[in-house]
Each structure stands twice: as structure tokens, then as C-alpha cells.
Image (cartoon, rainbow, N blue to C red; front, top):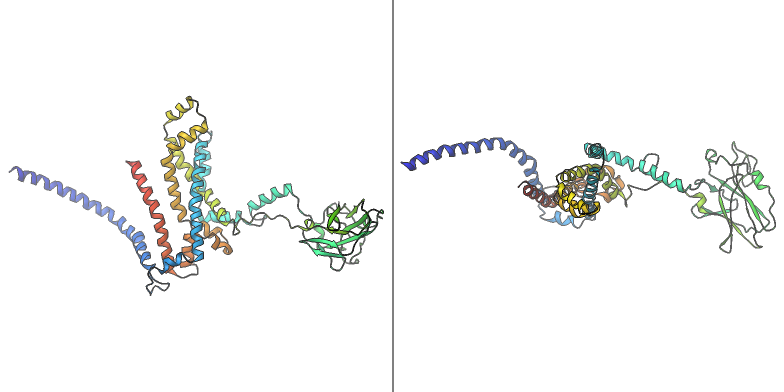
Length: 445
């Protein structure tokens, strides 16, 4: 009788539990269907598609996977992805840690954090466009090169005549890259006139004076005198190779008197283009205009060239994600036990010692989560690379995600190889995801 009573009591409990499970299934079922349709099915389909050729009709087994490790472009993408994984998360974690510690000591910490976190509100598409413009090589368009050129020109004025060229058949030989020199030997007591062309009248220095006066001075016995001038008369007229009244000298040009391959004297042209080498011994000399006179103006750094395109894109990524790293680490920093920090200060520890031996070890779990999260994120980076890298260097900056897209839809039309790349990318991301999930579960427990 007692057994039947307990069984009767257990049945309502089982029915209640079964009813709860059924209700839970009803609520979870839509999410499971979405998960299956948007995650499970694409993964299974991609894994199956990776075993077929580009047309999808012929089974090729593991050929697509072997091609991944034999194709130079794909190997370059794997190399770039490895650079991203090693460099970007480490830099972001380090920068975020330093900024999180420093913002604790700043009066307007909240405003500072807000400013650093604002780039997270910008889409990768917009950020890519912003940095593509910032990295433009033309200093008139790219802000970074505008700053670079401005700083460079503050210390080095460069040549005032980058477009100047010697008039052919007028006694000067050479080219702008090597410089120009007189074809005939010059002896002390002689005068030379060096006519150049290619300088627009509006590019002439404001202090330039007519060259006729500079060409008329008679040299001493131990001197070679001459004039460097623009062999062009505004409005036409004039005689090639001769200094005419309307022609101006080219001030600020450097000249050398060369004898037996060695520089015997140097001079700089005056406002009227005149110059003079004094104290020369008897002999034959060559008057030379060094290539520095014709050097092209400094145009800045080729940020999006083959050598710097990947670091440049990583720089844009740092700008976006620094705020994320700082805020997460700052939250962990706020939860640290203050008594340990104060005890260390009372014992005479410096702020550097406290940071290295107390703050960093206590923040290790948070730093690990931030680092692994960023590793997962950089493995999937696509937008910034695709938008910032110009077409000619797209392959130099390519990562696994962009390579997968280019192979599948960007002209390769090989969904078999693209699916193999997607499976490889999944296999690389999954371990980091599992690590993060386990870490979250342990911290929750």
C-alpha cells in the first residue's frame, strides 16, 4: 500500500518534469533551427564541397587541401595570417593593459575611455575607407604623408629645381640622376655659362635676378667664373646657349670643380646665378652640377607598398580595437583587491614593481581571455584587408579570409578550393573558441 502511494506521488512529479522539458524544447527549438540552418548546415556543406573540384561534379578527395600548401599565393596568405595572429593580439593586449592602468590615474578617465572606445562604433568598411585615404602616397591627399613630408622638409629643404634639365647640344653632358658636367675642359681664368631648361617661370625662386650681370664678371688668373641660368626668355625670342637680358639666374645651385676625378673646389650660385672657384692651380678642370641639384622632392612613405601594406592594415586594426581591449582589462583592473596594492605600497614597492609583480599576475586570467578573443577575431579579418590594400598589392596583404573570397568569388571561381580554405580557417579558430569557453565556465564556477 505504501509502495503504491509513493509511486502515485512520483508520477505527478515525472509529468511535471516532462512538461517542463517539453516547454523548454518548444522555446529552444527556433534557436536550434536557426543554428542548424545558419551554422551547422553551411559547415557540413562546405566540408563536403571541399572534396569536389571547381565544377562541383567530380570527387577529388584531398586534392584541394594539398593545393592549399602548394599554391604560393595561399601560402603567402597563411604567412600573413600568422603575422596577424602573433602581432595584433599581443600589441592590443599590451596597449590595452598600459592604457587601463594609466586611465586610473587620469582625472577625466571616463572621457578618455570614451574617446578611445569610439572607433568601435565605426564599421570596418568605414574604417577601411578612412585609412585608405590616410595612407595615400600623394602628400596632398594622404594625411600621414602630409605630416611625414612636412617634418622631412623642416630639416631638409630638398632641391629647388627638380624639373631642371640641361639643354642638349650646349656643352653639358649627363642626366639628372647622375648630374651634369661640362664636356670641354676648363682652365683657370676662363668663364663658363651653364644654361638649363625645364623650370617653369612660376617655380623660379623669388630672389632670382637677371643672369646677364653675373655672366659679365671677368675671372682672375686663378679663378673659374660662370653663371647658371634658365636658358629661356619669357614670351619667346632669345638665343639658345647665350645669356639674354630677359633670362634669370638660378640661385642656390651647388657646383664642383673636378680635377683628376677629385673635387678641387665647391661653390654656390648667387641670386643672379653667378659663381666662382677661387685659388685654383693651373690645369684642366671639369665644372659639375651634382645630382642633388635635381633631386625630386620627398614624397613620403609608400604605406601601401608591398613592404608595409600588412603593418599598415594592422595599424588600422589597432586603432579600432584598442578601446575594446582597454575597457575589458580596465574592468578586470577595477575588480582587483586594493588591499594587496596598498600593502605593497606600504612595504616600499615602486609603481613599476607593483605593476609587474602584482597587477599583471592578478590580471592574467583577464589578459588571457582578451588575447584569445582577439586571436579569434584576427583570424577572420577580411574587411580591412580587402578595402585598404590596393589591387596591385592585394596578394601581398592577403590573409586566409580574403584568399578564400578571392578563390571562390573574386575571379577564381573555384568553390572547391575556397571551401577547403574555409574548413582550414574553421579548424584554426575552433581550438581558440573551445579554450575561451572553458575559461568562461571556470571563471563562472
